[in-house]
Length: 279
Image 1 (tube, rainbow, N blue to C red):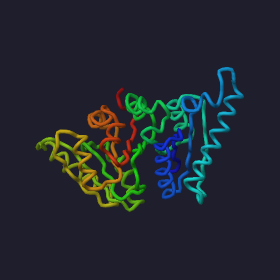
Image 2: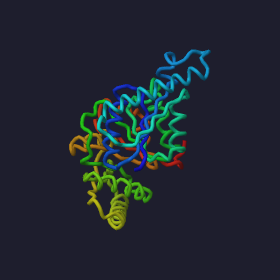
Image 3: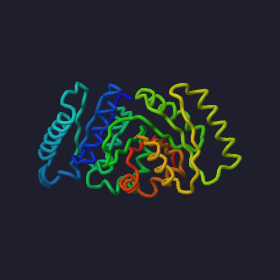
């Protein structure tokens, strides 16, 4: 991971996400891009309807100053490369543009780090982001208190397409010295599932040698509750999933990622994006 994008709306949620991104960038020596949209947040304070370009320029200057002050406060001794961006345009549109133009490898955001449209964005629009951006996203819960990676859990349906993603996740776990578990939730493990599991585990072990990966089949009819229980029991720091797993993605994100993370999950969620996901 060479470039990490962090959308900032100056809320506590966004500050948590930035702390998490700083932790990642320190380990990877990655560049950070901090982005603020004053489309919804400070629009009235930055410009008026007749302000035109002068109002937009003023908004940009204030945003960059506030972003700089925030980063300096959270990482006063950092020598990391940081780029500060702002726009009067709508947040989602600009995030997608920045990901492409700046070759972003990872987006880190808070559960409400997308300005006042956060609820809508993380509810109805989350699947659109996962479908159409080209890099993974980590969503950091507001209640996160520990910024570390010791145990990562990858939710899988034993699809061959999971293996390239698992290679990236394994490299991430290896860099942090973290434990990595591949977990599969099923109400009843059929003979076909057992066979798929055996073939999947064998292929993963043949292609990924570090770190050692554990494989867990979790009995349960409710994917969300079963995963949350496992994460709590094992004190996992990060849940990783792929949007290619359409049914699993719908079960979790089809409800409300905000509700899931606020009421249940205390760990961040990392979602790998795949453009071939259907709308």
